[in-house]
Length: 326
Ligand code: URA
Image (tube, rainbow, N blue to C red; front, side, top):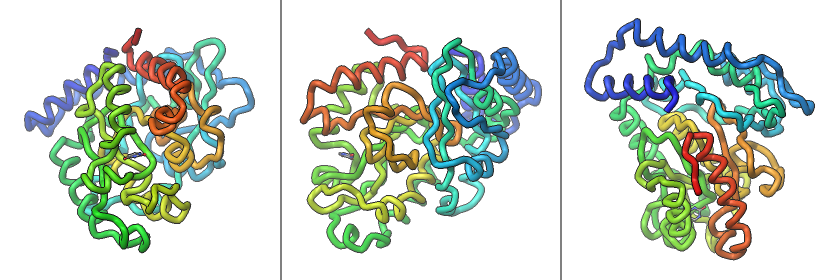
């Protein structure tokens, strides 16, 4: 485990134990480590014509607003994950963030040939305040329950509200390092009120297990919180209507990694139409979160030949977390 992450976990343990005032020396140490990690990386922007965006830890939204709509790729080179101070922002009000918060555009960092950390990424890592302002578990649970209650009463998509058995909000660890995002509930999920419980979910569980993870340590949700009739694809309007809820969940859980399962998740989260086959095998950036896009488990059920690609993606993803899979 890298020292930043270890310290951050210690800080979160302290907060869970009721210590709300973090000793300044400890906070400084974490910030110092973060800055050291950033300054030790060569500051050369990556080649290949990507845009170079300056990222300030306090104004990601404004940076995002300046950027164009192409998805952004993060270098797979090992680097301590960025510490995101905005973890606290979602809890500063009783309501989830406004829909406008969803308009952020992901940054693109192509894998750098010399293994260096792109400048934009190191900039995002420095000046971190996250360990001092991290939400405690209870705040996240309370925030998520509030949003879940809003979702349960939601009628923004009249057809979905009229046909659903219930909404399917999301499940899992409110402090998860990893968030899975799927497409929309199917018949089984609509019946049980939980994402990924049908055949695709069972395959997802197997993949998760093979990755040396458990379902309980991940947070799982979808682009939509209602089942589209006949399992049709979500319409753009439906995805837009539900986006506020998704962004609230992302802000509250504040994962370090998101896995987008399938093109609906990838396209909607990252606001792109790129083919999923071209998106897989690398990280994108969404508000400082590393995003991996890969094939949907339902696709794997239809096309088992693609399992090897998903496995390659999972190995790449877990290696970035320091876990080497066979
Ligand atoms: N497929 C999804 O994308 N999500 C679910 O929750 C179930 C199946």
